[in-house]
Amino acid sequence: MTGFPDIVPALSAAMPKLRGRMLANQRLSDVTWFRVGGPAQVLFTPADEEDLAYFLLNLPPEIPVTAIGLGSNLLVRDGGVEGVVIRLARGFNEVTVEDDLVKTGTAVPDVKVSRTAADAGLSGLAFYRGVPGAIGGALRMNAGAYGRETKDALVEARAIDRKGKLHVLKNGDFGYSYRHSSVPKDFIFTQAIYKGEPGDPAAIAAEMEKITEARESTQPIKSRTGGSTFKNPPGQKSWQLIDAAGCRGLVVGDAQVSEMHCNFLINRGNATAADIENLGEEVRRRVKENSGVELEWEIVRLGKTA
Image 1 (tube, rainbow, N blue to C red):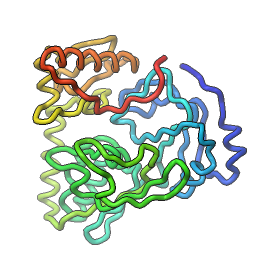
Image 2 (cartoon, one colour; image 1 turned 135 degrees about the vertical axis):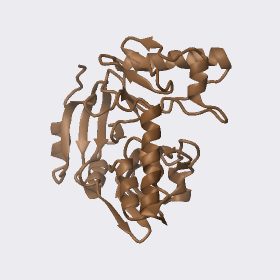
Image 3 (cartoon, rainbow, N blue to C red; image 1 turned 180 degrees about the vertical axis):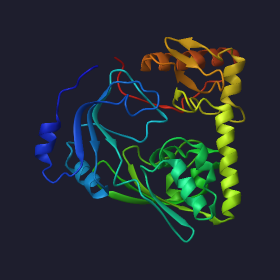
Image 4 (cartoon, one colour; image 1 turned 60 degrees about the horizontal axis):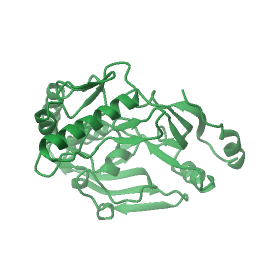
C-alpha cells in the first residue's frame, strides 16, 4: 500500500479545538463497495457541522479536500487520495419527520430516508429505496431511480464550503439535470429537507417492496460493485449499448462486466482499482466502436494510479 507523509500531527497542532477524528494513511478499500483502492493521506470524520466548518476554516488552502459518503458510487484508484478525505458519520446521521417534511443528515443512507418517510405515511421518497449510498451523494448527483430523482422532492440543503462558510441552498440553486448538479465542487452537504405527500403507508410499503424485488432480480447487488457504471445517453440505455457491443461478462484482471446487468462492473474478489477502471474504459471503447456513442462515467473515480 502506498504511503503519504503523515501531516496529522501538524494539523492537530493548528486546530486545538477540533473534536472530530483525524487518521493518517487510512485504507479507503475498507469503506468503498468495490473494496479496492489506496489510502487517504488523512481521513477526517467531523463531530458535527460546526466541527466541519472549524476544520475547513483552519485547513491550509493548499491541502486538497475530497468528501465521500458510503462509498457506493466510488472508485478509489490504487495510489490513494492525496490531502484530506472527509467522511461524514455520526453527527450527520439523524432523520426526523415534521408534518410533511423529512429532515435528514447527509450521512443517512438513502434507503433509511425512504423507510422513514414511508413509516410516517409520506409518499414521494420511495424511489430512494432503489438508490445505493447516502444523502450527500444523492444531493450532489441528483440521484434517482424508478422514475423519480432527488430534484423532485428536495426543498433545501445545507453545505459548508472550503473556507468553512455555511450555505443554505434551495432546490433551484442546485442547477439540477440528469445525474448532475451545478453546486460548487468544494461544497460539503451536511443536511437536507425533503417534502413528501400524505399517502397510505401500506401502498407506500408495497411500492418500496416492488422496487426491492426489481433491484434484486435485475442487479448484482450482493456482489462487490459500484452501482450503475455509466450514465444513460439521451434516449438510450447504457446496458443495451454495452450488451450490443458484446461486453456482457467481459473480464479484465479480476474485474468483470456483470452477467446479470451489464451496466454494473464487479470485483470478483482480487481486482485492483486499475482492473475495474481499465475494464470500464474497454467497455467505453467497444461501445463507441460499435454504436458511435461515447459513454460517460457515472461512478466517481478518485486519486492517483499506483
